[in-house]
Length: 316
Ligand code: GLY
Image (cartoon, rainbow, N blue to C red; front, side):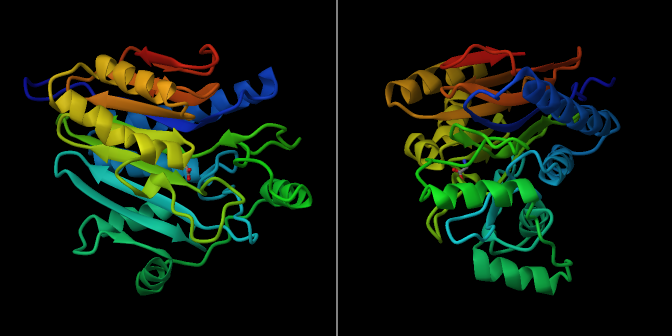
């Protein structure tokens, strides 16, 4: 490897929230996450850019009906699916995204297109117009499991804070926080971060998710972070830039995660995040019970599914 090439790194997540019901659930999630890490890391080794790797990872996670993004997104209070996604190219420090978009298979594709646009964040009507302009085929991301969850919740008058973290055949009994995210460091030493979600589930029409805001997805030349959890908690902590700016100001990624998650815990927040820095350090953190994350640190793959319940940060 030439002197100016670095070893790629990758971390992804499939949400955070209450513990998965059974070991079977955790094993199935691990299998899904590891398959994505394997495919995307192979692409990073073959020389794709961090942005390309992040988009591929988000597409694969959006396509997995288990996770709350793309196919398998949760329904809002009126029974409609509205998805949000964002992409941040760390080398260019450029953010793009879509808010409450509908009838598309991969919302991250719109965020990618908008990277090169003068208008880089579009909401519902604008994103629908863009879909038509790009001739992207209409797609219904609804799954039977999510529909049944919504019907059950409607019967209970939507008393849960959020929909289940992952779609399960047997409906989840506790609230969870689903979102997907990917952070990559490519062989050129460039970082990118992407995040995509169906939202909290059962929310008021027009509610805006953190996933299409810098608060939930942020990257510079120094570090990149993707968040998951209750969007309002993530916004209140301004979590992704809080961690990234601490790294830019000289803290290690691990210290930046520890300080930011200690503060979030003190404030009673329910959230998680994954991150990478330009030196190749990998970190994750959570205040929620579980964080569904997996990574490749060049020595091999690992995941966070067996982490202790509650506040924790980890490095890989
Ligand atoms: N973090 C996803 C949401 O609250 O919409």
